[in-house]
Image 1 (cartoon, one colour):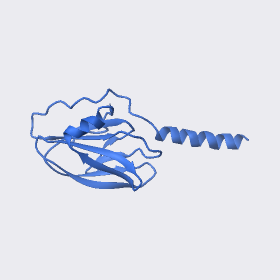
Image 2 (cartoon, one colour):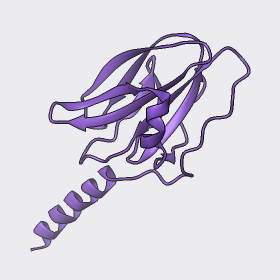
Image 3 (cartoon, one colour):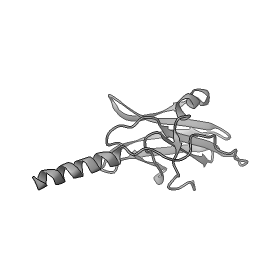
Image 4 (cartoon, helix red, strand yellow):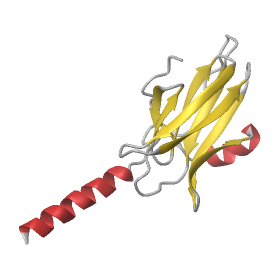
Length: 142
């Protein structure tokens, strides 16, 4: 009986950790940057059991992308490799190009085909990201 309880407790603890939601302030646009960088916004509107990726930019940790959360970073113009890696292994990699002064919105999502992310035009992104809460980045020095 105690063994079953411990197994159930561990299982519930793991599941509740995977369903963590962002709890910072609601979305606000990043302050303007005066240098020639672009702004990358990454957000996640929905939670899926067991998938809370660490997002890396060119192999440097950027943010742990919890449900209903977003974060942003200023990047010099160029091509960047985004890695979405999971605690228990697996993940995927994609590339983006940031242009000077650009606001690049990328939504992490899951579908029947697995996890992925897509670029969303700025005017359409506001309808999605406005209910997300800010996640403090692990690192913003890129």
